Image 1 (cartoon, rainbow, N blue to C red):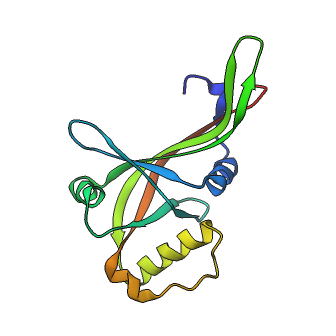
Image 2 (image 1 turned 180 degrees about the vertical axis):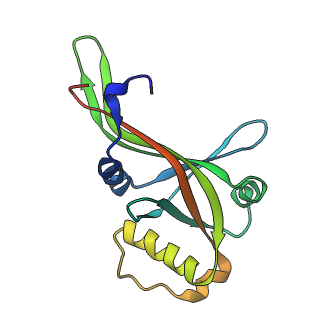
Image 3 (image 1 turned 30 degrees about the horizontal axis):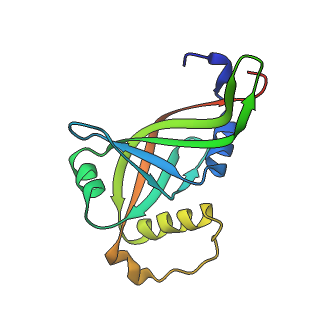
Length: 155
């Protein structure tokens, strides 16, 4: 990381950023350009392993790219505001970039993933009909590495 004074290494602080991010962007390998798509998400962290969950249609470009290469990049950010300094205008933010492997879930694992999504979106106790499972895909991204940074007034 170029500006180490902005790096966040404390996992609790990183989880706090993830908790407050509303949308993540997934980057997929494609030719001739990468493919990036925003998704609603959920996550879990057991103290060692971080996983993201998202859902989508059963067909389309995202599904094709996952089937071709399940390695993905996950980006999330929180924009706080612009700050007018003596030298310029800058942005105050928090962000993370993670890398992991995406797998399609089924049955109870898919239900768990959907519940994690609902929980993150503040609908933890919302009922969903399990009959929707055949008309959507639920995915888990097992994170292999993550970095985070922030810009505050002081850095």
